[in-house]
Image (cartoon, protein in one colour):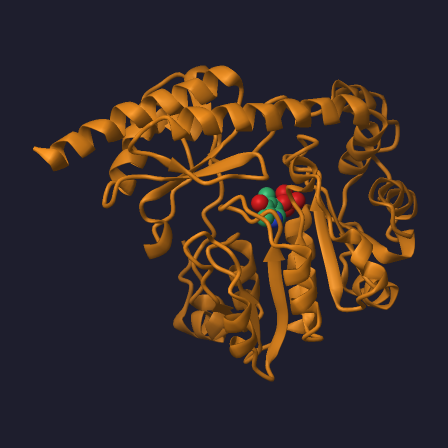
Length: 374
Ligand SMILES: *Cc1c(COP(=O)(O)O)cnc(C)c1O
């Protein structure tokens, strides 16, 4: 193999050379192999995916779509129209993205350069800090309080002349709680761009979309990955001031949302009632699972408005419990960071899967507390 020379290495931007790789969710086959368990026995609850999968209308629409040889419409006319009906704001305010991850990336590239920063309300979704760092900027972390509520005073103190955006995840991944409207208004009143990531809106039923009329500095993000089960097809949307949307259209790769994703989206919107019934089933199951987890003396689940539950485990046990779960073929989300080192996040799956998670957490953590007593 030819050598990747020092000269090539050094011609790469320094802030890019130093980046960490985002730990995404791994394919089932990889997880199965690691646990030595057949793939069909794996319980995969680490990506907040929809256990029901997409609407059956999606496979049908994809199989019947005649024009995959064509490029998508770079102006996203049909797509923006359809999304406009779904979110209830004008099409000129909307841009569709290759997942909402792409919209975060585009927004940051529009606002953040070397030396700039965003305010990140940690713990929160990892793509915000990564996105800022890719632009050569920094994510200034303003930690949430013990109940993961936003510390508004500290946010205001953290703002500098180089602060370009405040990112608010609502409900917050991975903690599951939501900011109040008053809190987000206080952030908007700073005049800085406020990005409200509503990836889990359908599970919470609460949106700040109506504030778009009042605040030109508000961007609301949504995705079809979670509630509509389209994570693998990659489609999300941003709603914002029309002037910002117009500029963003010029930053957007012309064919960013592929025709399969667009076709799947339109089919999903036509099947909304059935999809929302599944959302309701997931929400009921979340409450049942919260009850199961609360009943385990060594586990403290945090109340959640999304399709996942963050669980506090006995002190010092986080990694060990996470690995014990992996060995049983149960994959949850774990973070190697000080605030979350004794937590795991479980997505809400099918009832049988959720029962298995609760049983395994009890088996793995109760002996630890007995050890402590002995
Ligand atoms: C899953 C998730 C996303 C990513 O959504 P995509 O549309 O799949 O890119 C964005 N924000 C949060 C908070 C998420 O949890």
